[in-house]
Image (cartoon, rainbow, N blue to C red; front, side, top):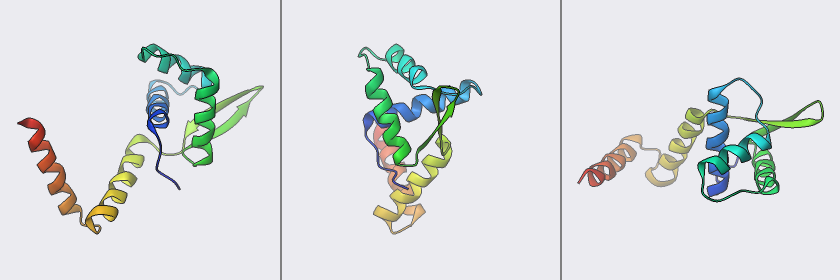
Length: 115
């Protein structure tokens, strides 16, 4: 599974997680587009949002399914599952799987932010 994704892909994933958390209803491209456009000063075209969501399907980050004549999307992993996988990848890639070293680096960055 490819966990690398761009800024708009990340925005869309966060939006779908929010929409999934709010209700058990199915999430459509229209839902995501409306939420993105309401939360942003810029306007995203339906085709742009759909194209990015379909790319996330290809990357196995979303699943697409049809109900009636309409397609809906759902995340493959929850936000916390995705975060855990990203943390493990970060630890492996930069800290030889040493979580303590990763935590020290995070703590150091947090301390910098507090100053």
